[in-house]
Image (cartoon, rainbow, N blue to C red; front, side, top):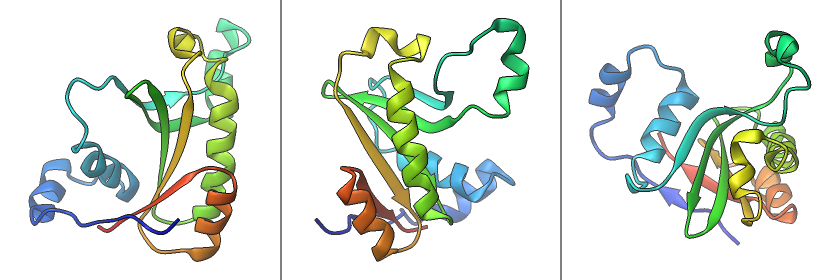
Length: 144
């Protein structure tokens, strides 16, 4: 399996002005997600896993993982992590999110659907691509 290379449209300068001082990964996520149909259910920066106690919610926000993007397409849950650096760390994040998905109350209605993990990286990293593929994670290169 190789790389998927997707070029940005020529309006990156407009997008940068549109999003102001948005972080690189947030901008990358916004640009990447534009290709999704408006009918596709999606969640951005979604907490993964169940909080053990409502009173402890604020404390657990610090240590709980937040997936960059979760969407459902063709009956498949796709959990996507966007990275401009620390690509290898995203593999552990995605594996953890897959484990926590069915434990997340908001996603209970979708817990019977298959899950596909996707790592979207801004730069080529062959070692990370190989590791991702060995874990069944789609590695996609998205140029900015």
